[in-house]
Image (cartoon, rainbow, N blue to C red; front, side, top):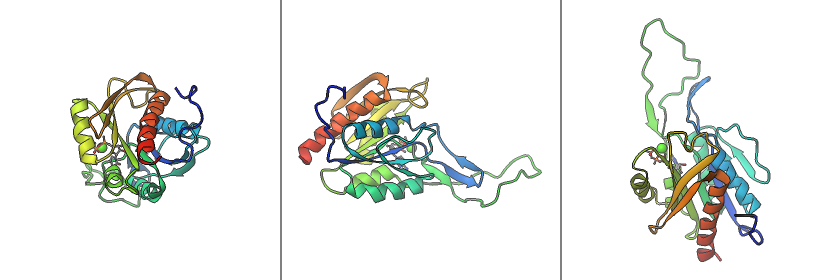
Length: 229
Ligand code: CTP
Ligand code: CA
């Protein structure tokens, strides 16, 4: 894939990709985070750039080096990611939310380091819900032909949960990964099924994240060609 492609099939397209894991601060030295490495999102951004797209990459925490040829916007929290994604989305032909966005954040940020107190049990941490960026982007399409893609990591009832999720989010495509047992998080490889809003399912065989990226851009390019020739 990719190497045998004639020309750059995403030339003239602007794509927005989110990647990495958001971090929700509790105090100046602590946060709630997740195990996302950013690898899948970075692979999506690099492959899109190689296929000729102008790429905006909104990156939460990752230890990966900056990819070449993309406009990189760094963010920390889900709120910062939302602001960066909503700012870039109106101009994007496609939006791919590969980031692991925290569902909840601490209700109160403590501006000084929380100290151990001289009793056995700490205070419980109260959490509040973060906005759902993918649902918001799907609902407020910049233009009818914009393609919106989500990712879902599931540990059980993978396809059934994925079907419910694509309906709930309102996105066009949802890449469903099985996680746990060494799959997805932290792995250079990935295995997935891409669900489409029209009911289609595309199996992605176990392989490098760049191969999944290529297949996903094929599906996006096909949709763009239909709606925005
Ligand atoms: N997502 C988002 N904003 C959030 C949470 C998730 O945009 N606040 C996006 C992710 O980037 C991903 C998709 O939604 O593309 C699915 O994330 P997932 O965690 O699987 O779905 P949730 O709706 O949060 O459901 P749950 O965690 O309960 O399975
Ligand atoms: Ca979630």
